[in-house]
Image 1 (tube, one colour):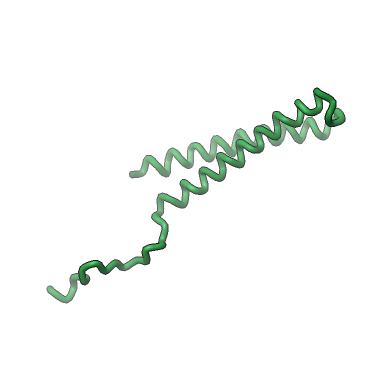
Image 2 (cartoon, one colour; image 1 turned 60 degrees about the horizontal axis):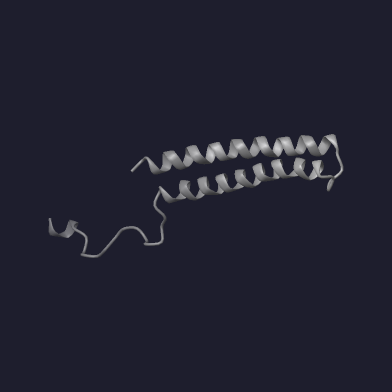
Length: 89
């Protein structure tokens, strides 16, 4: 059975192939960062409206609410993805 063993130092996969765990970690970090940016935008727009830098408008208020809510949801999805990808060790 000498012919079935690989030579020492030989691998069947290239070195640059990412492990299956690193892809969800990168994705979850991007989701968390995107969610954080949306939450900051959703909090910053009403603040700018209150201090009269931006004009008060219903459309801008609804957009800031939508940004805040979607950022919160993206952050939660990213945190759950990160938790599941790191707990599969």
